[in-house]
Image 1 (cartoon, helix red, strand yellow):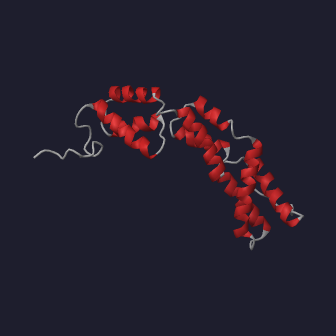
Image 2 (cartoon, rainbow, N blue to C red):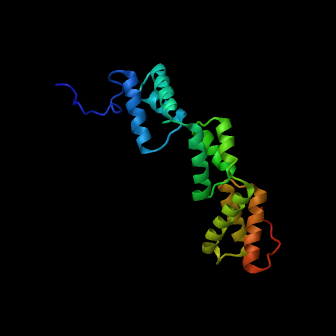
Amino acid sequence: MGAPADEDPQAAGPPGDPDEVARIVCLRMLDRRAYTRAELTTALRKRGVPDESAQRVLDRFAELKLIDDAALADGYALAQHQDRGLAGRAVALKLRQRGVDEHSVRSAVAQIDRESEVAAATALVQRRLRSLRELPEPVQARRLVGLLGRKGYSPGLAHEVVRGVLHSLDGEVEDFPLD
């Protein structure tokens, strides 16, 4: 008895026409979320699709705008910045890890200006500060600067924002080291 007709072509490797397998794999992946060309290339390699077939299918998908790394980078950059509070340099790192070309990374991150970074960092600090109110102010400051550092903010901006938020709450901020 042969394999069932509805067997998943991703599960057993490429059983037939490599171009058709590549199309099916890409369509199923893109049905869930947007992927970069590099991510799709990696997925096709893992499934044993020959590089020539993968490139033909990916080129066609790019022509049809089913794959658009620049558009993905733009949307991803804003979403990561606005929803997760990531700084521009953290967003750039994530885009590079996803295989987005440097021109598209720069273009996407250019949407994140200093004012929006200050606003996002301030919102993060204010939200996190609620759970730190019982701690001494130097400890609060250290933890808040660490939070911003993990989100990709520069030390200078992190110190500026933390001092500003703490100053606005207490009126006077001790001159404590934030390093």
